[in-house]
Image 1 (cartoon, rainbow, N blue to C red):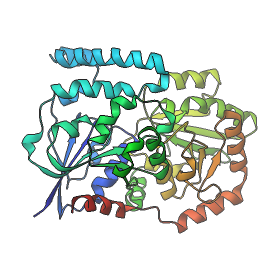
Image 2: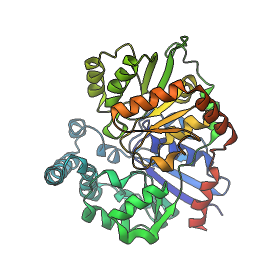
Image 3: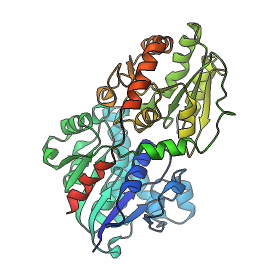
Image 4: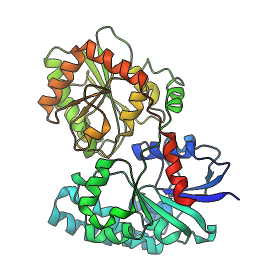
Length: 400
């Protein structure tokens, strides 16, 4: 008899966690496991990429109200959700005012604690052998799903944010297991939640090189990223948000241009910082050099078209995009964010440059000029298999 697995996520927008989920869904052996995927809101460019072998559960309208604009939700008559979200935002606002801006992640925990009570139960789906909550806050799988074992995923570097540990701890503690995507992520998480050490299971983001390489061949993007002799094409992919540090790309790019580097720096993604990034591009007068590509359902042809992939993040859990670029044999540059050492080996399969703009610019310029180092990195990437589909066995072991 097949074992049953339930997986929940908010939506399928472009993002590292969402791409990691696709890797998991493509890898699970559906001959032995029935997988039900519950997505709160059936939106996002990755929706069409969900494998047909996975049972996508119907959208539940009330669950979709958790992330949508409150005015829109109010017009649909969900007054209880709107009032509860407003109250939660007020409470979290007081916490942020006291603890600083980077305590903002606690907003979602306040909202989850308040709204989950108002959501319909999912226990009518029957009992699962394993239920997975793929993105926090993790209240829904904990309270609304029936399962023999439950696992919550960590995708965030907790050393970079302030959270209301007292508020989050009861939720994390109630799970049977907590999946961490890297040792560095585990270390940072346990500094905030030291009592949860025995629940941690290391399960890296599951990625398939063959899938990435096949997707890279699907589309010709030369019109958007044209070849021009002696012009280096840099690419960065991610949400337009504070962690990704895209708002500093125009300043770094300006230093490179002033240093005589001929380049185009493409940024793919979406998010709340788009207006800020555009303003920074204008202020730096980099309109001809920094190009926003916007949302793309398939980032891989663009990765294939770039000369160097750059992840200039302020912090990361473990950047899926870096691994994907390596699978496409692209030289990779990352900034020295707290978990950078677990992302790649400097000088072997990528390069780590300083976080500050001047240091990053200098490091990128030196790397662009060092063709021998680039060739050596590419050769190393061809020798290394970055696939880790066997990580799924760790999930099976939690069930059997």
